Amino acid sequence: MNNRLCEAFLAAALAAPLCATALGPHEILVLANGSSPDSMKIARHFVERRRIPEQNLVVLDLPEYADGENLEMSQSNFVARIWSPAWSFARSRGVDDHILAWVYSSDFPTRITGSPPMSLTGLTFVRAQVPPRQVIENGTYDSPLFAGPEPPFLQPFSSQTFDTYAEWLGTEMPLPAMMLGHTGTRGNAIEEVLACIDRGVKSDGSSPSGTVYFVLSKDIRSKCREWEVPQVVSELKNMRVAAAVVREIPGSAGDVIGLMAGTAAFTVPASLVFLPGAIAEHLTSHGADFGNDSQTKISAWIKAGATVTAGTVAEPMSIWMKFPHARCYAHYAAGCTAIESIYQSVKSPLQLLVIGEPMASPWGGVAGRVKVTGLDRGRLRGRAEVVIDVDSAERIAGYEILVDGRIAARDKRAELDVARLGAGRHTLRAVAKTSGAVRRQIFAEVNFTVAGDAGGADDE
Image 1 (cartoon, rainbow, N blue to C red):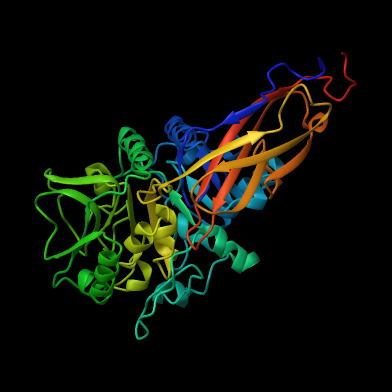
Image 2 (image 1 turned 180 degrees about the horizontal axis):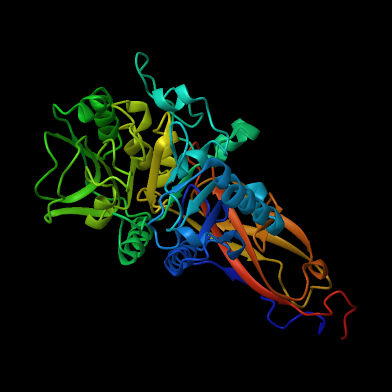
């Protein structure tokens, strides 16, 4: 018997069926404000519910934002205190090479000052490289993730997942970002944010029979996106998703999976019921300008039961390119996660703050089971060949094997040098990706422990 390796090494692990999501948990970097107990609690809840590797949790020290009352940060401070430290941390943990999105917890600045201001998620999206003033103001920034359509050519691109875009774009890939919640001024209670995360998880694979409501009125906030709706209603119908065009926010509906409006102020009726995973927003000037007491804030949607929302942090004018296109719901119905759906539908997201549970995937579906073999302790002598087997009716087109959050192989098998891992507890995550434009991921995990003398010879 090999007593150089810990007895806790598992021979194999068979994961329970998981809902497949397009964006993988290991592809997200989670940022928390270590000076805020609320921020830490929300971040850890998200990490636990979404099975984000612990190595992907970045804790920053931002004491002046801990109470949620300070809403602004300069561009230089963003780079010095958020952008650079977070990437430095990711590199030190060896996870930087596969991060496709950032997720901020609460108690971060929501607006980055400048002329004009940008949102926290907007500046993250352009990787801290500020575009010219006119581009921000006029909404002429052209996001490489925007899948259309736009006038006069109304031909959209098919829905994709972030990993596909990353393969196409390489170093030009932007960094989509969301906040889990704003718990400061005119924001949500921490309990509401935690409940929102739970709704996102609950939505996965639910294939909801709910309705997407498009509120079209004479308000310019509505009229600027009116042209988007007919084509999307038809597209959703072909995807067997109900869509309704109405003239005002419904006073009573028990099946809301999406709601796109255009209004400055409203009260969400108590009889309006949002299904888990619902995306709702209302295109107005001060929706995410939490320091301004005019107009209804996007936090009202989260309080009412929506899972994802978005609004601008500065005056956007009625420029449709700065807000989610109606086709957001078609990306969602195609199986993309909420964050992938939002960012494929916004042409110029520089002033848009996106809030909610990013991995919600109501149409994600279940792809199967992943089995890990090769960790048979009787055969481990300093090295182990790990193999992924998948039980799925869907075609598997790609694999990843991660050890402690780091990519060990992008294949269905990997030879691990156990002795180099170091003594202590480790986690292996085996990921399988389906084929198609909207790839979906399932994974299994095996926890194991390496003894301090794992590199020595066997004692039989």
